[in-house]
Length: 234
Image 1 (cartoon, rainbow, N blue to C red):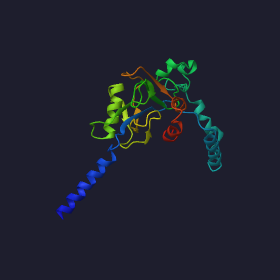
Image 2 (cartoon, rainbow, N blue to C red):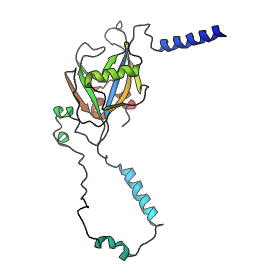
Image 3 (cartoon, rainbow, N blue to C red):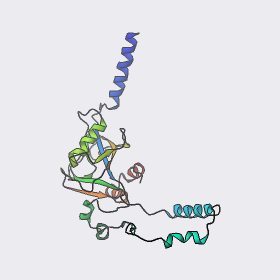
Image 4 (cartoon, helix red, strand yellow):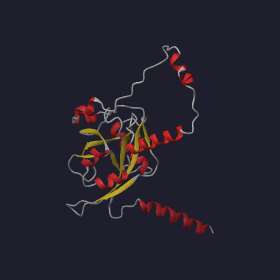
């Protein structure tokens, strides 16, 4: 019984290592999709607005009708300093109006949409600087999630204003060099992390960086656009 249990344990260990094994010298990379959520309420979709209007009118027919004199009592009440005029936050910032690439380095743009961080520099499988996600080659970390945290930390420093969504990757893709088949393929695993209570980061270890919307992001990666469009839900 003991021998069988030891064999079973050894088998599970071997299977776990086999999943991350690189017998054909494949490189395993942890990439981070660093996301800033919308900071103002986005516009209501016309279909949703039509449904809300229908629901309101449907409920109104079953509500009690109050006398007009009762409804006007609120108008006769004295107005004090406690009343504040509500002014909604603008969805379009100065950065959106300018639409200059240097303003893409700011988080104060596209306030009603999600933004994603891209950095410019050399990366795995690239001999020249390119736009890419924060990433790191999986080496001695305890697991891929720790590797992803290390990758993001190397670019923004402190992780106190970040939140990693889940422990498992949100997607993965295999990239093979089209020029030289002898170059090992790269298995890239994507992890999602979100900005928490911050409007600026000290981005380092790169030539440049941008915060882009999903539509803009797909333009940076035309070859992987179909995959990224399915992986990123916004």
